[in-house]
Image 1 (spheres, one colour):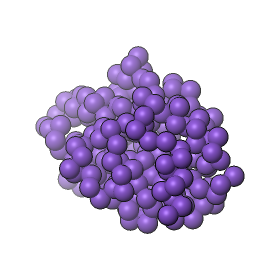
Image 2: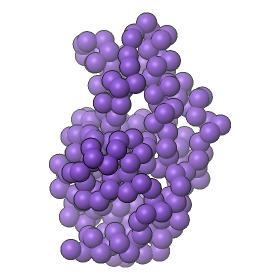
Image 3: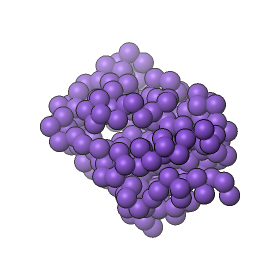
Length: 218
């Protein structure tokens, strides 16, 4: 075991699914008579659902109501995405390589556990991960670093030995706030908006376990 860890965000990283979340949010808002643009949705990628609801309703919702509405939206998403879901290109190969190199692996997502289970089971990648962190395990959304710090703590790996894969602006900022190194994927935002990341790649075929290990050893 090399004592290093790689932490993966889920949406836009393990799966290229942001388009389906967009569609689900638009459908949810249509049903609730809210008007929202895809730009407004994208600007909040990496946030917890309750933060979206605070934006939509203009107030803090009671926890039970927020959870009920959140599951309503996520059920729309899962129904839309179920027939299309597949792991991101090159992901399984990289996960296999990372395990062979002795990395500890985690998923740290702002999504709820139902969505996390949906992605891991539909793509058959659950067994790669040592630790799973979902929205129920944190109180603050990205760019707060809580979700990544929680993952590192559960992995028992220091932040200086953690590499994060992210796609959102809030997610990259959260990883930086956690004092972790971060590789940004251009799944959701163009390269010029991701400059605070240590490296920017178009997809997992552009990176190797050896390169990650060398970066963390610096």
